[in-house]
Length: 394
Image (tube, rainbow, N blue to C red; front, side, top):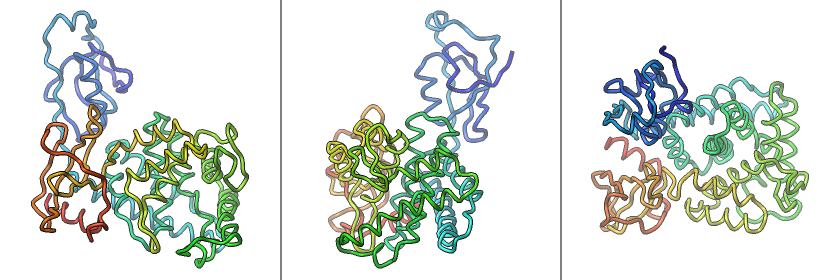
């Protein structure tokens, strides 16, 4: 009997005829038995979701161990990393346009267009499920004068990646993504002079700034079709475990796991983003700040660690300085050796100039090491310029 089986339900000894989903992106060189758990894990890591199985040919694991059987070899037909990033940018820009319309509607007291939010968050979810690295990279291509628009989009992407890492169901992931997308819609009610003030806010200004959370809650309540989970996520994004958050000062167990997750995503994006009046921190520096906040009982310590595991010690899209005095962009993780990811070197620091890009798997090269995680502006570069160069190189 031939059946279509979810990858989570396949086991050693099953006979694979073909990949059922995604179609066109992966191909088996030939039908074969699954000979080990590592083969199944390899298929999962490549994004294979469903397999076509001939159940009549299933063998017991003991039989498999006694035979030398060729594992199914996956021939991958995928676009280059630069092409995937280009596609991800289209989704990110589309999300920004929808966010702009949401702010306009909220400011004028109109109903939010939830259908467009559902559509674009579904696109992001599908892209992240197939290849989280591309959208992760795009999060680093930001514009200082568009923080208000980009922040909510970025937090939604981060929340989606985090939720998938936590192995939550796709239905829950969708609701979390929508809640994150809407969480800061109330900021449109805050005067620009306070929203973009470069210096520290005084007590009165800070109280006005804090009111954005309640504005968001009220706007979302008036939007038909927003689920309880989406509403919960938006309502809890500024609450702290120690009870010193806002708007309701709830604490501890009163803050759901989803509320704790979005707090981490929200703070991380705020830390790494550059604005007109401040430069953002590197990803690694931001991780250390998250950990410090967890020690102060503001954030959930275990979830902070899971979030860092989700993005990786060196997140995809992060810039790193190599000991060969070059800059490189992180393009992929090595799960067996997280501190030695796959990178693409593209810029020499002495003299300062772009060079022919070189793919480097640091786990396989003992002579090259990461010195530190850096930001593009430290070298008078910007991420858009870097991605354009790498796209041209690709």
